[in-house]
Structure formats: C-alpha cells, structure tokens
Length: 284
Image 1: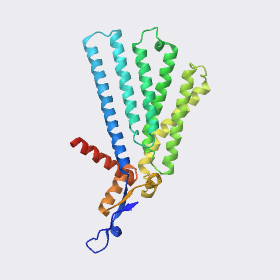
Image 2: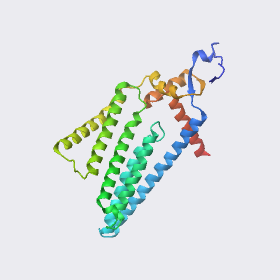
Image 3: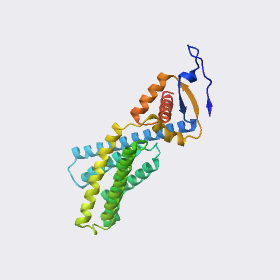
C-alpha cells in the first residue's frame, strides 16, 4: 500500500493530520466497472428500442386491419416482449454488483421464457409449443423469471450492514424462493397436488412475501449504515489499493453521498471513477 507524501498546510501542519483519506480501487476494478456499466447501458437501449418497435407494430396492426388471428398474435407478442423487457431491466439493476450471477440467471431464464412464449404464439397448432409440455415449460420459466426479478430488485439493498435490514432481506428472499418452488411444483404436476391446505400455504407464503417486500425497503430508509459498518465489507474484499489524501470538505461530501446511497466510501469512489471514465469516452 502506498501513500502520497503529506503536504504542508497554511498553519504549518501536514495534510495527513488535517485531512481524511480515501482508498481508491485498483485500476482494473474501475475499468471493469466501467465496462459493465457500458454494456448495461447498451442492453437497456436495446431492450427499450425492441419494445418500442414491437409496440409500434402492434399499434399499426390495430389501426390498419381488422382484429384477426394475425393481429391477436401481434398483440400477444407486444405484451410478451413488454413484460419480459421490464423483467430484464430488473435483472440489470444488480448486474454490476456482487450478486451478478443471480442477475445472469434471471436474464437467462427470462430469455428462455420469452422464446417459449413466442413459440406458443406463432408456432402451428401441432407443434410441441401448443402442447401441455409447452404450457408447463412457459409457466415454470415465467415463474422463475418473475421471482428472480423480484429478488434482484431487493438485492439492491444487499450491501446494507444493519442486522435488521439484512435479516429481513434474506428472509424475504427465502420466501420468494419458497413461493416460486410451490408454484413450480403445482405447474409441473398439473395441479395434481392441489388441496385446500396447499392453497392456504401458497397464500400465506405470498402474503409474507409481499409484507417483506414492503417492510425491508422502508427499514433500509430509516436504518442507515454507519461509516465503519459500510466500509467493513469493502475493506475485507480489498487486497491492494492506494491511500489518497483528500480535504476534510471533500471527505464530508463523500460521506454525505455515501450515506445517501447506502454504500461505502470505497464503492462510491469506484462508481465515480467509472462514471468519469464513461463521460470522457463519450466526449472523445
């Protein structure tokens, strides 16, 4: 670890005695975050553009022709693409974080569900997409896609260190997984295990799931992380870095931004460096 030489201040003291220090992430980490951010921006543009084109085609088909079989299929395609575009945006919310593998899994299962759904809309009646297996496949992948999107939105709070927030977060994630498993079991068995008790169980888990989804973000708003708690996970993950002296005013501004975003100072600096790098690339 290297540190810049302290500079004298106006009253003769050194900067190391009067300034706060911030640990900068290695250059590779900053460039990696910039690359992920750039690809995420491209993905968002592609998703929005594809949905807009599909919506335009749906509007034209409604205004120009009568509501025949083709028009209904176009409307179904528009609805399907729109729904899974929203799910994809939910997955992309954490694609640059520590839980990127969950985002990748969510994107994969969402794409699979979209392909199966499009096959069900456009394939001939005698194809397997229109069979019971096709409906079951679409139902299972759709449940997994929605559940992953739900979990990914909550995992935006995954860096919070307050015990109450973390416990509530992971209990809610567990409820999401349990509800998905119950629904998948119902679909896979063609509702063969449906009973009054099983339906009540699904309803209870769903209510608790909604409760956690509402309560956990509210707790995260009122229970902010302390500076030391937020910096702890980042410090544990850091193996190399440089200590850069900054003025007390800059340190206070960093702390204010960090508190507002609920991240550590190191993570905030990494995001700011990545944003500056993106801005420089766009200008050049």
